[in-house]
Length: 165
Image 1 (cartoon, rainbow, N blue to C red):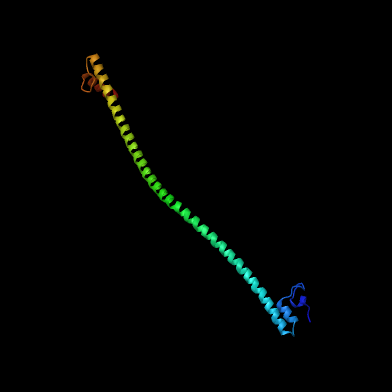
Image 2: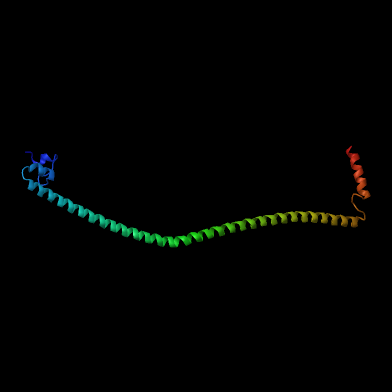
């Protein structure tokens, strides 16, 4: 017969012999084989119960963690929903304020443009008024006017085209 090392193939120690190796070694005693099988099945059931207990403990722990996560998610959602609502309100307020600022900036630009236009017009009118006053003062000092209708202006303007020819 083959030794337990060679039956299992590989370098297993002789103290650890599988059920199949034992069955190969024990050929004659059927009750002994049945006892061996029952012993191996008992060991298998014990291992399975151990694994089941380990798995059930892990599942219980996971369920506990999931319940904790659900509670935390609920607490966060209770705070998160009002924050989102307030954020949306602030965005609306920001949009309204931006529209108001744009309107005010346009009004300011319009007022500035109008003011510049009025300033230019009033400056032009002021210069015209100063010229008129100076002309009137000069006419008063000389005793005659220098307007287009004056004879002095007509004589000097009549001489200029002739000089230019």
